[in-house]
Length: 336
Image 1 (cartoon, rainbow, N blue to C red):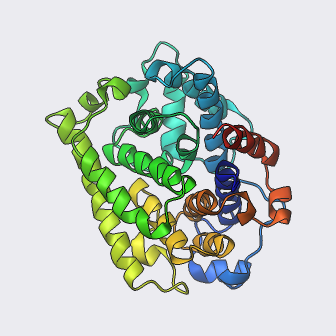
Image 2: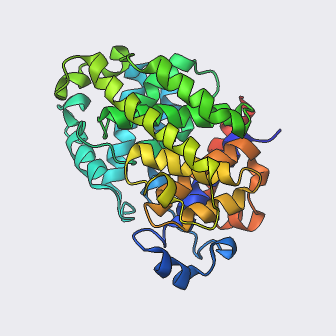
């Protein structure tokens, strides 16, 4: 068995750790600090950022929810909210977390406040889709449940419709690759999902979230997000036609600070180097934008495709939170 869940979770953490020292730096600074991208090494110690911390928070909340039965909005929202607030309060939350997550989690900590009232509907930062991979991995979840749950976990902090759509697409991409989809099939499958979902507002999962924005209807609200994701998928496909692994990937598909660009640039690095997961993560980490989140997503996609064997043993032994990542991977791989 390729152990797709284990490969995904390790890959995202390894990408996160490799991109941690390069975030906020330009290419000249990165190359001076880390050397040529093809020979980049995992930092020592291999510390991760809030990307992996929040992925594990979602994984814990998801495990609690599924322990109570089928995935439903009420079963998911409460434990994930609790885990996000615990992360916000943790002394280990010192890895340059995003302001949207910090503000939303502060509001979520007030128990009397509905989560829809805490959601930041103006933010489409990548802080929601960089953590969503567990929803592409857990077994026994229907497609509609995965889609709704991916959007709900995004909306707890990032309520912009593009953040919702990008989280949905990211979870779906992980799921497709874990289930054996070929890299060359991925963009058409993601585009088809985006088109089919374009005017579907998951009220069962999102409640009245859309009413907190300025759109004329929930359908108009969610279509706005899917349209931006469809545009970036077109940009991704065009970039792959002239891809140069030696160039900064952010020049092709965006710097990754916003959700749809993080998805596209993470996919770009993976799809440029689909047969070399370590090289794909190195290329993503050696980028001028949100390097840790881009490499986190690239590692998740590469790990879902190749499985646990994708990653050098010495990297796996060194990564922070390795025991918990391996435990979730074993849980979901065993029950797949």
